Image 1 (cartoon, one colour):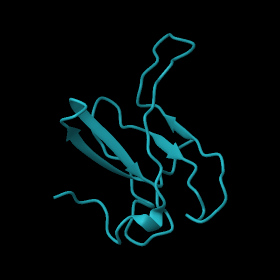
Image 2 (image 1 turned 120 degrees about the vertical axis):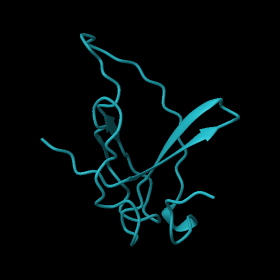
Image 3 (image 1 turned 90 degrees about the vertical axis):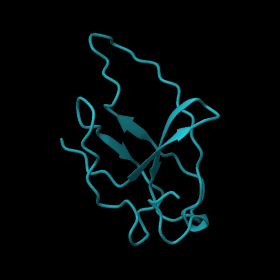
Length: 101
Protein backbone atom coordinates (compact mmCIF):
# COMPACT_ATOMS: atom_id res chain seq x y z
CA UNK A 1 0.00 0.00 0.00
CA UNK A 2 1.18 3.56 -0.62
CA UNK A 3 2.78 5.37 2.31
CA UNK A 4 1.53 8.78 3.45
CA UNK A 5 4.69 10.55 4.65
CA UNK A 6 4.38 13.12 7.43
CA UNK A 7 7.90 14.56 7.31
CA UNK A 8 10.08 17.15 5.64
CA UNK A 9 13.56 16.23 4.45
CA UNK A 10 16.48 18.58 5.16
CA UNK A 11 19.85 17.49 3.75
CA UNK A 12 23.27 19.08 4.17
CA UNK A 13 26.99 18.33 4.10
CA UNK A 14 28.64 17.76 7.47
CA UNK A 15 32.35 18.61 7.39
CA UNK A 16 32.93 16.90 10.75
CA UNK A 17 31.46 13.58 9.59
CA UNK A 18 32.91 14.00 6.11
CA UNK A 19 29.73 13.39 4.19
CA UNK A 20 26.08 14.05 3.59
CA UNK A 21 23.61 14.18 6.45
CA UNK A 22 19.92 13.64 5.81
CA UNK A 23 17.45 14.78 8.44
CA UNK A 24 13.69 14.42 8.65
CA UNK A 25 11.40 16.72 10.61
CA UNK A 26 8.27 15.08 11.94
CA UNK A 27 6.42 17.87 13.74
CA UNK A 28 3.02 17.09 12.27
CA UNK A 29 1.01 19.20 14.70
CA UNK A 30 2.60 22.45 13.49
CA UNK A 31 1.42 24.66 10.66
CA UNK A 32 3.87 24.92 7.75
CA UNK A 33 5.94 21.92 8.81
CA UNK A 34 6.46 18.74 6.86
CA UNK A 35 2.99 17.29 7.30
CA UNK A 36 1.29 16.21 4.13
CA UNK A 37 4.19 16.83 1.78
CA UNK A 38 5.18 14.33 -0.87
CA UNK A 39 8.60 12.66 -0.59
CA UNK A 40 11.37 14.15 -2.74
CA UNK A 41 11.74 12.66 -6.22
CA UNK A 42 15.45 11.93 -6.61
CA UNK A 43 17.87 9.05 -6.98
CA UNK A 44 17.12 5.75 -8.70
CA UNK A 45 13.83 5.10 -6.96
CA UNK A 46 11.86 7.63 -4.95
CA UNK A 47 12.48 7.04 -1.24
CA UNK A 48 9.48 5.78 0.67
CA UNK A 49 9.65 6.48 4.37
CA UNK A 50 7.04 6.42 7.02
CA UNK A 51 7.26 7.47 10.62
CA UNK A 52 5.06 6.95 13.64
CA UNK A 53 5.12 10.53 14.98
CA UNK A 54 4.45 11.58 18.56
CA UNK A 55 1.01 13.10 19.11
CA UNK A 56 2.30 15.96 21.27
CA UNK A 57 5.78 16.98 22.37
CA UNK A 58 4.64 16.73 26.00
CA UNK A 59 3.30 13.16 25.75
CA UNK A 60 4.86 10.40 27.87
CA UNK A 61 7.65 8.21 26.42
CA UNK A 62 6.45 6.00 23.59
CA UNK A 63 7.67 3.65 20.90
CA UNK A 64 8.13 5.12 17.44
CA UNK A 65 9.30 3.41 14.28
CA UNK A 66 10.96 4.24 11.00
CA UNK A 67 10.55 2.21 7.83
CA UNK A 68 12.50 2.86 4.65
CA UNK A 69 12.81 1.30 1.22
CA UNK A 70 15.76 3.59 0.49
CA UNK A 71 18.32 0.78 0.91
CA UNK A 72 17.73 -1.93 -1.72
CA UNK A 73 18.23 -5.36 -0.21
CA UNK A 74 18.39 -7.33 -3.47
CA UNK A 75 18.32 -11.05 -2.77
CA UNK A 76 19.29 -10.65 0.91
CA UNK A 77 16.86 -11.96 3.50
CA UNK A 78 18.24 -9.66 6.20
CA UNK A 79 19.83 -6.22 6.04
CA UNK A 80 21.59 -4.62 9.01
CA UNK A 81 21.69 -0.82 9.09
CA UNK A 82 23.11 1.53 11.68
CA UNK A 83 21.06 4.66 12.29
CA UNK A 84 22.29 7.68 14.19
CA UNK A 85 19.58 10.05 15.28
CA UNK A 86 18.62 12.81 17.65
CA UNK A 87 15.08 13.34 18.92
CA UNK A 88 14.01 16.87 19.78
CA UNK A 89 10.70 18.24 21.03
CA UNK A 90 8.86 20.08 18.25
CA UNK A 91 8.28 23.01 20.61
CA UNK A 92 12.05 23.55 20.88
CA UNK A 93 12.27 24.24 17.13
CA UNK A 94 11.55 27.65 15.61
CA UNK A 95 8.18 28.52 14.12
CA UNK A 96 9.36 27.97 10.52
CA UNK A 97 11.76 25.24 9.55
CA UNK A 98 13.05 24.07 6.19
CA UNK A 99 15.61 26.74 5.36
CA UNK A 100 19.24 26.79 6.28
CA UNK A 101 21.39 29.87 6.09
